Structures are given as C-alpha cells and as structure tokens.
Image (cartoon, rainbow, N blue to C red):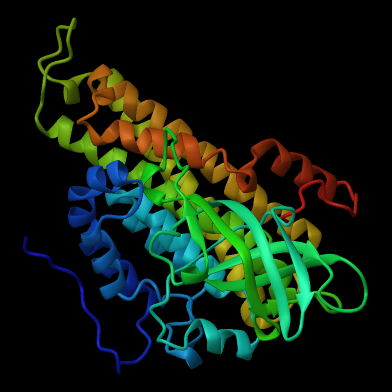
Length: 392
C-alpha cells in the first residue's frame, strides 16, 4: 500500500494555523478511505495513526519548549474539524490528546511526558471516583478503572483522576500521569457511534506513581487552568462534530453531482427539485452557524489564555452555550442532509450513516449537555454566581 502524508521539518519554525489546517485537509481522502477499518477495529487504523503523527498532530498543543507547536484550542478545533470530514473518530482522539496536552502542567511533569519526544499521544479520564490511592515512600500505589479513555490503544501516557490522601491534609482529588505500559486495557468499547475512537476502559492494579507524576491541587486554580480544564474541554469536542457534519455534506454534494432522479417525483434530477434546494440551503446554513459559534467560543478562550486574564462567569457560560449551539446546529444540518440523500444514506456501505452515528453519540457527551448549558447561561445572565454546570 502506498501511504502519503503531509510531512514537516523537525527543525522548522512552529507552523501557522493555516498550514496545520491545510495539512489536515490534505489527509481527508486517506482518512476517509480507512474510516471503515478504523470503525471495525474500534481504534485507529495503522495508516491513519501514522499519517496524523507524521503531520505533527500529536505535538499540536504540546508546549514549544518541549518540541511541540504550542497551539491553542482554536487551532485544535479547526484541525479536528478538517480531520473529521474524513474520519470523526480520528479527529476525536486528536482532540482529546491535544486537550490534555494544552492543560497547564508543571515543568517536571512535562519533562516526563515528553522525555521521548513531543509526538506523545495522550489519553485520560476525568472520573475522580474511579480510582483509589495508597501513600507509600516516594509516591502512591494507584488502583482503579477509568472508562471512556479515547485513544488509549495508541497512547504513550494516561492522565487519570483519583480521590485519596497523598500527603497531609486529608483526601482530595489528584491527577496522575501513568505510562500506558503500566496499565491494561479492558476492551469494552462496544457502541453505536465514534466506534473507532478506542474509548476503552484503562485499568491500574497497584501501580506505583512517583510524587513527580502526581498533580495535587494547591491553592486556587490560575485563570488558564480554570478555562482550559473547564470550557476548553467542551470547546475541543466541537471540532470533530463539525467535521462529521461537513463530511456528510461532502457526501450529499457528491450524490447531487450524479443528478439522480428523486423517486416518486416528476423532477428530472434531485438538484432541480425545490425541496432539495431548500434543504441544502438549510443544512449549509446550520453548519455555518455551528462554525461561527465555535469560532466565537474558541477565540474567547484563546484570547483570555493569551492575555492571562480570567473570563467572567457570563463569558464562560456564553462560550459553553456557543458550543452547545454549535452541536445542536450540526444535528439539525445532519437531519436535513439525510432528508436530501434519502433512505440509502443508512446503508452500511454509505459513509453518511457513520457520520450521523458519530455525531449523535459524541453530541451527547456530558460536557455537551445542551440543557445544562442553557440553564448555566441563564443563571449567569440573571446574576446567579454559582453555575449549575461544573465544567464552566
């Protein structure tokens, strides 16, 4: 098999957002070609993993001082929106790894994560009740099971949470960086959508974690930590879902280009039907709306991080609402695209049904709960200081 990818020079300057998005766009045909294999294997195909690594997407958000590109949520979202046109599962694991990389960490911890170079894929889980720790000399012994660890089958490191006593002060939630070589994978990812994301359960059985790889909260979080560990996680998820929807639009345009007749109608071809034109306009507008709201959210996040200023509760809630609006708009667009294509879009061989399943599954992630977003935004707008959604 001939494998092509967009390469990059290890010694060159950090590539601009436009170049990285162009790299992602160039990979769409290849990722599309291997999307069915990725879905069947329930983790990325070898070819897909190789080309996204070669294109530099493992290092996309890795700090520059550790050999990465140091880009923010906006670039990550635009890159995954392009990759998602070819394979939403591939885009999802790029987004997850990038989100973990971008969350602030100590220099000592980053030195561990990138000791073998910046192309270190990361996975993780945010469930603080999934593990327990036992303090020992020099660190802790960690035991637990963390589900939904997207990308764990090819990750070098896992970032997990657990509740326990690490030092004096009593039990609290801590973060732990654990090499995947110390963990096992329970392959329980049997789902309807995002099948290729490899979001299995990772298992630690009495694993030693040295103090240097423990993140213990001390004092209030910085503005950057609060933003990137909260609404940053929601914003990241918009990219792959934009990509899945855009990929479905690509399929519909290809179908319309064939000028097939609408069954049970007198229209000579589908593009000439008024209903097709109206549905296509509506779907495209919904996708544009999703892009615009996503861009507003990521611009706000990146701007606050770059300036080192905190976002107000209203600003954070609005960004969270923007992301929810984007996801809802994608689902509305997908519905119209399926209307245009017709029942044949649900054939297993048709990539349209995969995009639909990926969107419907991932769009219901807890970080994307639309009703919580509405309530949180409304509370903030009316002056209620405590958000109902905890990831704001």
